[in-house]
Structures are given as C-alpha cells and as structure tokens.
Amino acid sequence: MPAQAKLLTILTEAVLEDDVVELIMAQGAEGYTISEARGRGAHGLRSGKWSAGANIRIEVVGDAELCARIAERLQSDYGRDYGLLMFTTPVEVQG
Amino acid sequence: MGGAMSFEPVVLFFVLGVCAGLLRSDLKIPGSIYEALSIFILLAIGLKGGVEMAKHAVGALLLDGLVIVLVGALIPLVAFPILRYLGRLSRADSASIAAHYGSVSVVTFSVGITLLGQELLEFEGYLIVFLVLLEIPALVIGVILARHGQGEVRWGKLLHEVFFGKSIYLLAGGLVIGYVAGPEGIQPLDRLFFDLFKGVLALFLLEMGLVAAMRIADLRTYGAFLAGFAVLMPLFSATLGTVTGWLLGLSVGGTFLLATLFASASYIAAPAAMRIAVPEANPALSIGASLGMTFPFNIFLGLPIYLWMARLMHASGG
Image 1 (cartoon, rainbow over the protein chains, first blue to last red):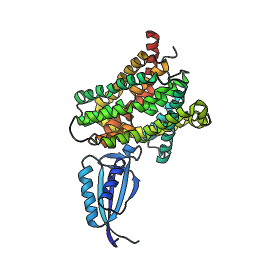
Image 2 (image 1 turned 60 degrees about the horizontal axis):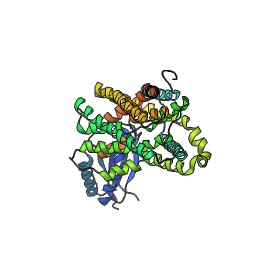
Image 3 (image 1 turned 135 degrees about the vertical axis):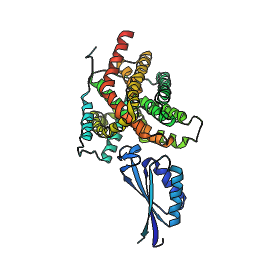
Image 4 (image 1 turned 30 degrees about the vertical axis):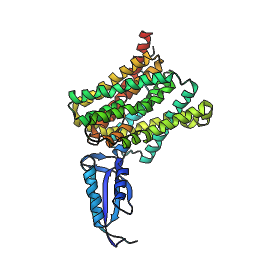
C-alpha cells in the first residue's frame, strides 16, 4: 500500500450496509471498517435505535481514483433516496 | 361482563419513557440492552405459541389460517386508497404506510396477552403464528402498490429481509422450538421465558416510550389527517378482526387477540423492509404514525375497547 493514500468516509443508513460493502469490494478496495453512528442531518434525527433509524460510518483507505469511483457509484445508486454523506481526507498509511 | 374498561398497569412504563423523553431526562437504554430485550421478547412469544400449538391439533388451523391471512390482506388494500386520495399523500408514502398498518406489532400483541392474563381469559395459542404470517402479505402488497408496474423491485432482497430479519426469524424459530419441545420439554425454560416476561416487557415499553417521544414531534409536522388515520384505521381493522374471530368461532380471548393483531401497526420489521423496497417513501411519516400515534392509542385505549368489542360480540351473537 502506498504511503500516501486517501481515506474515504461514508456516512449512511444502516439498512444499506450489505449493499454498500458489496459495492466497495466490487470496485477493488482491499477492505473497509464499519462503526455505528448517530446524529442529525437532512434526514432528521438518526437516533441509532431500531434498524430503520440507525446510521453507520464506513471507512475505506485506497488511492484517490478508487475512492472517487466508489463515491460516484454510491451517489448515483443511493444519493437520491437515502441519507448519504461522503468525504475524503489525505492520509499517510503507517503500517 | 367485567368492568367497562380493562387496564394493564405495565403500559405505565411506556408513559414513564415518554415523559423522560419529553422532559429531556438523561435516561437512555443502551443499544445492546435494547437488542437483548427485543430478542428475549420475540423468542418468548414464539416459544409460548409453539407450546400452545403442541397442546392442540393443528389440522383445523389451516382453513382458519387461510381466512385470517386473506382478511388481513384487506387492511393495506383499504388503507392505501384512503391515504392516497383522501390524504393526498404520494403513491410511495401511501403504500409504505398501508404496509405498516397491514403488518403487525409484537409488543402491542404482548400487552394484549398480559391484559388477557390479568382478566383470567384463555386464548387460542396458535394465534401467535399470525404474528409471523400476517407480516408477509402486508409487506408484499405494500411494495406492489408502491410500484404499480413502474420501476424495478428487488424482490430477492426484500424477501430476504422479511424472512430472515430478526423479528420473523426469532418468532418462527421460537414457534418451532416450542412445538418440538412441548409443554414438558420447555418447562426448565419457563422461569426465564415465561415468568420474567412481564418484567422484560416493562423495560421494553420504557425504551419504546423514549423512542416514541422523539416521534411525537415528527407527527406534529404532518398534520391532522395522518393523526386521524392513525386512530381510525386501527378501530376499523379491529372491527374486522372481531367479526372474523367470532365467525371462526374463536373464544373471547382469541377474538380480542385477532382484533389486536389486525389493529396493530408495525414499527420494527416494516420500516426496515420498506426502506429497502420503497426508498422514496418518507420513513418519518410511517414510523411517526405507527409508533407516535397508533401504538400508544392501541395500548391505552384500543386494547380495552377491543376486549369490550369481543365480549359484546360473544354476548350478543351467542
């Protein structure tokens, strides 16, 4: 893995977990990390209770091109109907 | 006939939760505890149903079951045009809400069972099977109504969610285990699953109160139509259930439980399934109505009314 890489953070609805993970792996990512999340946004308060009200944060580390590809696919598949926020940050991979 | 109105004190825990939410108390039930409580309730209800089924012959159940599922499927079909044309909601929202009302609530049903226990009324245990069976036609009809031939439906994904989502999976699993084990086989588990049931239900209602408190504000935004629907629809469905139960020759307790099943609206299984199958529907509308209005209406006013209706039907109809 290159020392310089991008971290793609995806905040979305927990019901999408399986679909998003499948898409990430299909685009060629090496792996991902998922954590449970809650908060408030354009889709109202996401309390983290009940599966329909829960959010997840998915993190993927990879090159800029991979991150852009994943983000583009997610936006076109789920951006219209689901809560979806994505951003990238430059990271230096240590190990 | 007993007192005019029956009351089950366990619902006071729901009030305690709602007040904590509205008064901004720091009371929170951790997510993992909530998960554990819901697993307990689903398994306990499933086991109870399975044990009851093992006591009776199941053959006669088939025809009754078919009638109950067919009549139950009417509920979303009646709800949809009301929401769409009277309420002027979008097709997707109308279909999603119709599916929530056709689907059932395990907790409402559980409160119904504790109410029967308090009134010392027997019921046909196999009715618990319909907690599982009524879910499926409602969700499938909801999706068909939403799509109406337009757009693709991810049936595989939806059906997987319906059958292997934890509610149906645990209920059905409990039914099978209870049926196979029978009353004697399950006895060592009685203390955990049956004796503690009401206490766990109380804790679960406390949590539901906390969640409902957040939803009550949602509902205010969507106006009088949906609030009225959330009260009148369960009354209509309960009437349908009372008449069906009486025609099928169920006991007073069984008639009441069938009315309760028909009247209750889902807020756990249906939201997850509808979010996947009809993503353009606004979940705040359907959950706001089912959890913010219908659930509290049912446990406080609805259940005593349905019990009264069942007694009246049996008293006058013979």
